[in-house]
Length: 404
Image (cartoon, rainbow, N blue to C red):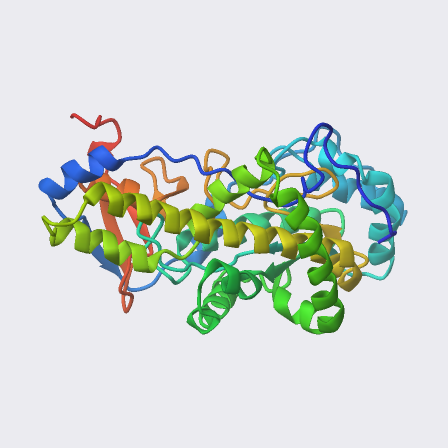
């Protein structure tokens, strides 16, 4: 890939590429309290196996192009047809301009892979893992949401195969190992996650379309360079972070509160509620808890920002995959963002739990939403699992209001 720095969106922070998605919290605290006082666990059922073949079929047929690509043997014409398929609204999150803006740069490199008879590659850092979080999910193993994400990517690859038989190879750079240290999690706790993801890929028969690697492995190849540059960038960031009115920092810290490990405070909150001490000032304790969360989230946000700025300046991913399209789960200029969830879903699969809706669509929600209204769902377990593989919305509850 040519050594070109893509311009950022106008009127945004110079670190605009530091991807983060503000949490769309609905704060179901009142409903959770009501549910706790009248607690009924979800009904459940156990299934022996899951039909991954049917999951692939649930993605629907490939959408049609507005114009049928020409039947040409010219690799550049085929490359153009590949980009047209990738940029279909059914496959692409964000505006079409994000990919169209680098079209002229991508065409020759895609044409080279087509000439060589190789799949067109899209490399995406994502799938960081699922550490336990009482708001988002109890399950630490991947669930139906991750499997559905792979099915959607596989559908794109199969569609591209109509114009270029090898299709698309999505290279997923698992980024949990590099994030865990500053989020506050133990890497060894995630050792099974990539194994289970690979099992999903095999069950979907998508081995040619999806490959997983660990982003940490790319860093290890250039470890000294990474450490030296990160020290330099940390110094640069401290200048900006010292500003009182730095909105980008404040927004990032707010986002990082969700993922930062607060297991000690989770336990403290339970002690506070279940075993109150009349001699303690509850308001003062809550203030200290909030300060602890804020401090940890600030640390997470700073290290996260330093990490992304470092690998961007190193061109870490682009150097490792010079002939690949740079992908992302956060739509931004100069990168390709495919759907890895239903269009109506706002949460990444690993940030919540999968819900099979009454119309058979697959959604992802925070599990706290399930806890607030357990009567609306059935928890579906794979035999041998301790937590639900997905939740099923009950037919009778589809139109029931909170007060119904």
